[in-house]
Length: 91
Image 1 (cartoon, rainbow, N blue to C red):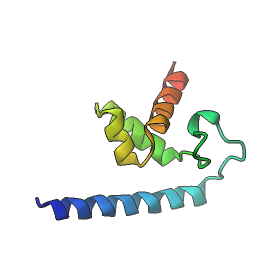
Image 2: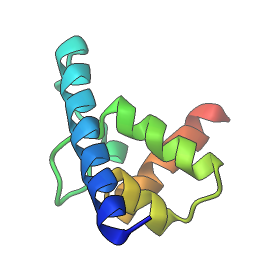
Image 3: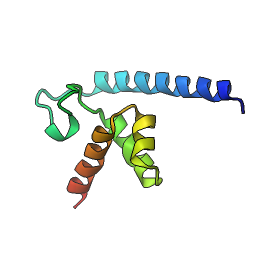
């Protein structure tokens, strides 16, 4: 595979992810009170359920936090927050 082919696939995946998020937003109501564990002080946007699922899936596959953050377009802090939130809910 060539590098441009991989870059094209990456861009397409990002566009599909954005479209999926838009559909989720239309289907679900966005809560008016934002959970502090899903929002960083620099970012007022909530982390949508589809991204949380993606983060948890990548984490369960053994990827590093940096890799997960890169693939999910979240910050490392947001990635850690999603994983910690799931640990709290799971216990």
